[in-house]
Image (cartoon, rainbow, N blue to C red; front, side, top):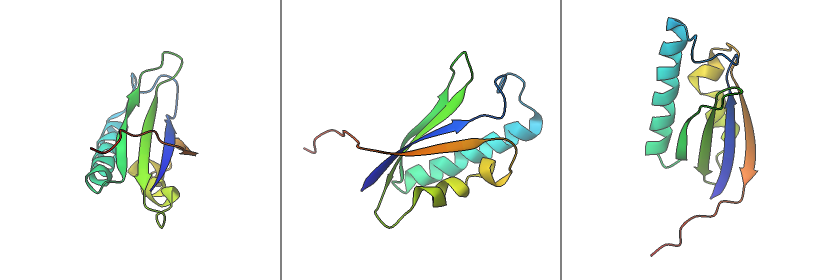
Length: 100
C-alpha cells in the first residue's frame, strides 16, 4: 500500500462563505465521491480545514501499488467541473497503528 496526502485548494479565499448554489451541489457530489472511495478502502480521512487565511480540503489516500492517485483525483466532480479547484498530491510515509 502507498499513501498520499492531498490538499484541495478552493477557488477563492472567501469560499465557502460565499458559496453559490451550483458550488454547493458540486461540493455534495465531491463529498459523495470521496465517501464512495472511502468505502472501497482508498481513503483514510478527508474533510475541510477552516484556515482563516484560506480554507482548503485535505485527503489521505491509501492505495494499492497499481492505482495512481491522479486517477481518483481527476475523477472528482470538482476537478471535472473545471471551476477553480486544484489538488496538490504528495506521497507520504504513513505511520499507522500497529495491527493487533
